[in-house]
Length: 264
Image 1 (tube, rainbow, N blue to C red):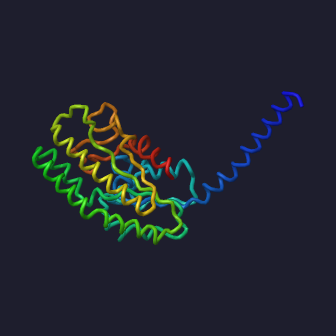
Image 2 (image 1 turned 180 degrees about the horizontal axis):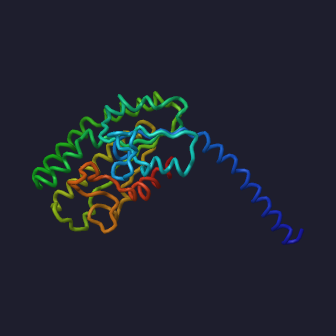
Image 3 (image 1 turned 180 degrees about the vertical axis):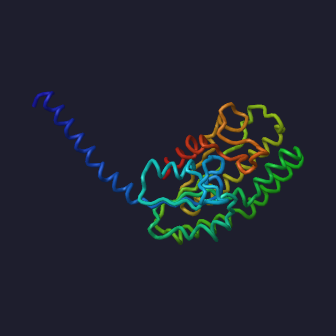
């Protein structure tokens, strides 16, 4: 056999092998039934273009779950994530979207249980002492109570969707501590990031205990935090307070989406 004929055979064989995977990949995509659960970080608050029918849940077509569905064309996709949702809200109002046919689930939840939104407002408006005290109290509460709350959510997901691959996503640090930020002290910024780190650690541990996959988004947001020149997080905006400290559309596309895609 000549080198040319051998190369031709190898090329044809490799092409045939590659082509044999195409139907399998297409079939896999066609059998994915995806449900997105969680709070405003999953519904897409901050990403804009909110879907009118979602009401105060503020679901956006620019949320990471919708972007993933657009790119992968699953057999079915539904987001029931809702702005302001706590662990109890997910259990009461969202788990009914799951079934034994659900094959993929994503979720962010836990921040609202610790009142992150109101804490952030107080950190800006009431100064460093109030900020640090409220964050320390939230960290203590999270360490004492959030693991059992998350376990209740995760147990509910597994009961409703026993065949699903579940991806639990965390929250980004809000501040690049190497940069100066006008209007908030370094002490407050350090405390805020520390609170988020505590929250993420608790969520990661709870997800691992449930046998779920965890996605840490903090690295993906590095260099794109509040006060960075190319930020993917909204800072405090009194004209639209609901979007404050939430990912922008870029934050969903370039941070949450790739982290989720790598684990879905």
